[in-house]
Image 1: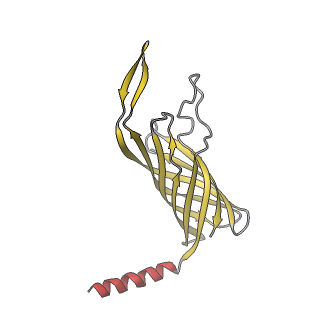
Image 2 (image 1 turned 180 degrees about the vertical axis):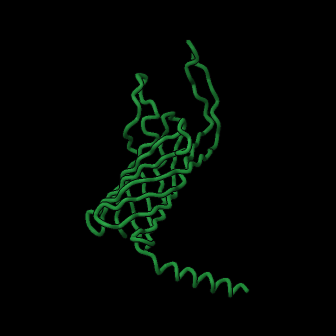
Image 3 (image 1 turned 180 degrees about the horizontal axis):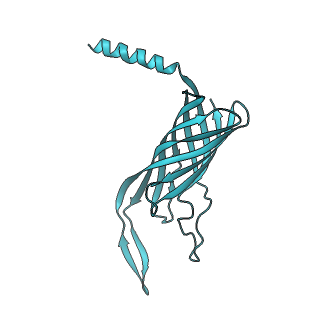
Length: 189
């Protein structure tokens, strides 16, 4: 029975590989929750941030001149606006891309994971007129968001393309809805 299951798995995998088209590596930057995060006391909000990331895209032929793309990306770990908090993002996206010119529209859905870590050291914060010690938690936690994605690729040539994506977090909730955008340069491997 084990051999039969193994044989069926191999045959199914080989059949799926027949539709494989390409793998690409992307390097870029993203901005989280555009215009939702206040950067200054005066009320200026974030519009562009340099948050480097890398992504791998696996392209498969699909129906009606579309490609199915599985994308996995991860950011570099970085300090949050609170310097004692380390942020790390990673995501998996399931996209469709329409091939018709150098501009190729991309759309789909995915999952965005945000990992926050703290070391448990105390913080000294202003508490009225005096400074007070506050203990921070030790460890990490991960938040997951379902996201909707729309974007486009622009092909410079057969090996290099630019990608712009707009990712909607909490798309169903008008109060909590936020947008991230991603800019990357991708190289077909």
